[in-house]
Structure formats: structure tokens, C-alpha cells
Amino acid sequence: MAHITDRKNVVRVHITQDDFGYWMMSFEWKDGPMSLYSYRAERNEHEIHNAYHPQEIGLPAETEFFISEPSVPLRAGAPEWRKPQPRRAREPNYIVKNGKRIN
Image (cartoon, rainbow, N blue to C red; front, side):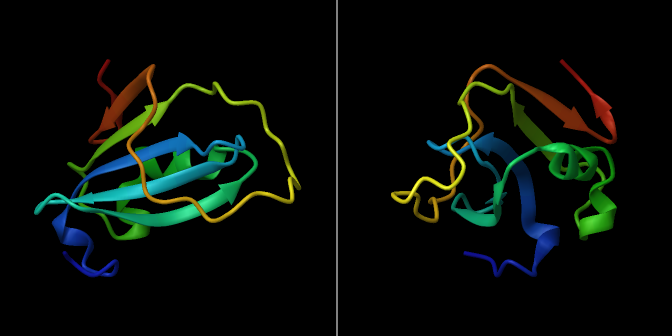
């Protein structure tokens, strides 16, 4: 698996919610595994911005971003919350590539 700083080997980014409604971003690598990049965001605006401007976080412009529609109510401060494992974007989702929504 590539190291989290080796961003040229990222082929897809998944922006989705964890089971508590927090937003998270996972990198999917050319060789298959995934790595958690960011998590526990109450809103997704920052991650959405990254999808349209991937170079700002060191990713190639052609990186595909799979972005989930909001579907999990936020349970901020829930004591049972734990750092999530990387995951793919939940359905329904849409794709952003080269700074444009493509579906």
C-alpha cells in the first residue's frame, strides 16, 4: 500500500458519512487498499471544495471523487463514536473529476 503522502498513486477519493453522520474522506490507491485521510467533519463543504480543486491537497486533477448525498443524521458528541475505518462513498453518490461533476 502506498503511503498517505504519496498522492500521485491515489485513483479515487470517497467522501461520505460515518455511522454517526460525520463526514470523512478516504483515499483509494492504485493497488486497491484505502486510507482514511480526514474524518469527524460536521459539514462537508471543505471536502467538496477539495473535489473541485484536488491540486490544493496534492492530488492529480484527474482523480475521481465519489461524493455521497447526505443521508445520516449527525449525532455530534455521541460518547460511543470511534475513529472510522476508510470506506467507499455511500449510495446515492455523484462523481467529480477534473473539476466538474460528471453525473
